[in-house]
Picture (spheres, rainbow, N blue to C red):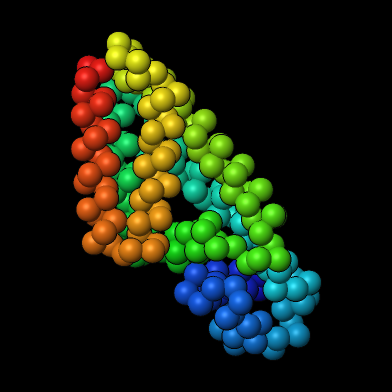
Length: 191
């Protein structure tokens, strides 16, 4: 129970302040324990930070499976996932933490974080590819095969993450409108 509370407190702090600005004293205070008590659960701040990644990876993978399943509603599913990036960022420390570490992991943990992020993005891309393959979009007659559509969509996710994190919600919305219009035009040519 305490380990979970520590992870939740750390997640919130890391999402808002970043790794380097967060202290173990703050995390302990947030949970109502002494700093020394943290070490009964986590050997270091690095250990606590890294313990969050599998949890968030699983959460993100479950989320995309819920949002995008293929079939006749694929277009609305794909758009909803992109639209919800901003909503989730505003409402969830999980998404804030996720985007912060995706673009600026702690330098000394870079390789570990990037390896996990690559694995997750590969898994997400495979899921999206399977969903597109299980939809009317798979019947392309204009050289927009499933892999091309999938790669384009994942590039849109990356672009929107970047825009939201570095330029804010208004620029994110402008970018979403523009990239979706192009993607929608491309997929309409398939139908």
